[in-house]
Length: 488
Image (tube, rainbow, N blue to C red; front, side, top):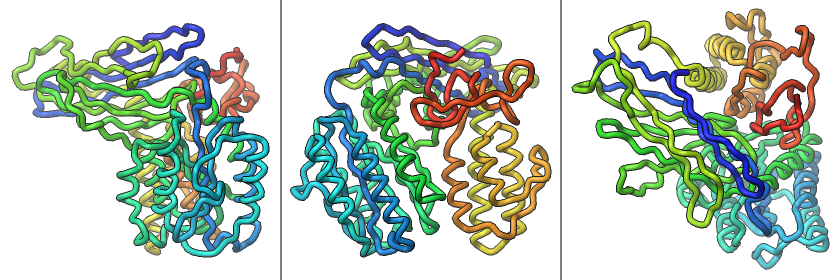
């Protein structure tokens, strides 16, 4: 890591934002236009004191298509999960339940406006959930559009939609999802869950990547209520509605893209504004005490530029929208050093390489799924072997566990695998969602099992924010980035 800068601090009662830039600054001087990649690490601490009143407004979307009743345990688990989430909403939280079929209706409240939670209203909503019937089709666009209209009338700074489905978006003609996502982008955060064996991971990721959320699934219907409780618990820690990442390129440099790579891959688009300084601005949503990482790509040309010295390519900063309050870090530079030394120019920044391998892992998984769907098991096996080798190299334990359901692993480092004869198509869907998540950190992500003092296997403990089992010696949760303040 050739560039490393950080600003920290933690005044009581105010959120503190820190920013780190990690990059390899040396590029070959003999080439024409090139790309410079950097990983931006943004951390928020103290978000619990960000302001009074409920920060969250919640819409629970339940797939009520006819397939949800086959088997009936699936629909029962969906209802129980919604009830578990409702019971966790603090008093004063605006909430609603949407019944999703080939249309969308508010199952609670009957008036269509979102009430503020009380014990009595939560009980009324539970009864409404248990009265739901499974009948109809699936039109995710209509579900999200109704959620948007419900949340638009609320003043809570963080709008959130929790969507559950067991199928594919079969009635997209009712209200095309692409157009709905265009309208909903920036209006709320959406997390989506799959249940059963007919859901489409790519469709869920299409929604959650655009709406700054995450996609996941359960294999056992009975696990869903517990997973919903963990998700709501994490949501209640989020109190900073959004942060803006500003990238100001120097003359001769261009911002190619900025995307979130940790803890999940998330699509980011510029705001479209044209500040006087030529900055590109990217809005990130719903922060608690957590860490996120972003990959920045800049294009630049060495023609006419000085050699053998550091040159500033861009300045990166973090801002709050009007009305926000937090201690912000000073802007940090991204630099380039044009060199004729191939030893220097061939270096790769550790963090950039780590997330590049994660992206290759995602492509290998997608290729395996496509090959299997097109009845080419040999090609699927080769892609899965590549995925196993990549997951092993970056220490992606969750992805390796999912891969073992599809292949017998004979040599993880070499990617030698054998396709299992008893795999199920839905196993690919679980693998695709798992591959959208990443980890990072030397405490957690080395290949193999974590070890404690003396090389003995490390004990594990649950993360208080998301429930993930993590090594007891870890400083951060690999899933949600929560810092373990009390750990040694």
